[in-house]
Image (cartoon, rainbow, N blue to C red; front, side, top):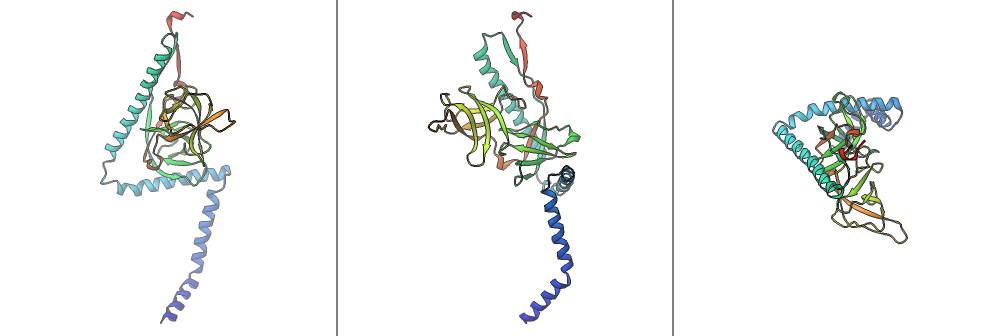
Length: 281
């Protein structure tokens, strides 16, 4: 009985070997296609991602029927807006406290943003990215900052027609100019595959302690100042090293990314220098 069943299974596989061979060839072709960095293949990859995103959007519609997606989106959008406003108010307070006797100050401009839904992640590739449902049709551009209600998440890395790839701070090629809110210590925040999120370039005599919040600095060319990046865990200093390493606990929960917000305000508007009238021309 078992021998007959085995014979029928072998006959079935042999009779349909052409189909199995074709399926294996298609899988191999797709794998080769998505691991090729040629410009033509990159364009095809972007088109494929767009189409996959469109298909996933149609399929996911059924799973969202019982959810109040609009209410959740509105709440997240409001929380993000409050986070941005709070960051700017905090910066304005600290800046005014330090510089109120000077004749120049920086005027903060309101930040505009668009809500985007995370479609899927591409964390097995370099750079570490997620795909969102906004693209060139919605005015997305490369290097636009991307945030959550908790703080900075990353930036737009590549723009397709209907989707965009967001490079997360978890990528080792991501870096941002930052400073601590407490001691005003400047440094560079980046991701290390072995040490995680950390702030480097901090002089060994700088005053920085565990619990200090690290935010984007005024010297960042891409990001508005005051966006939360992470909290200092425990500064470390190795013997003979001129700089400290500052490990950070990320402000954003990257394992729970569902909705992101793209800051659409032009980067050149983040810092507008205004001269006091008493200083003259």
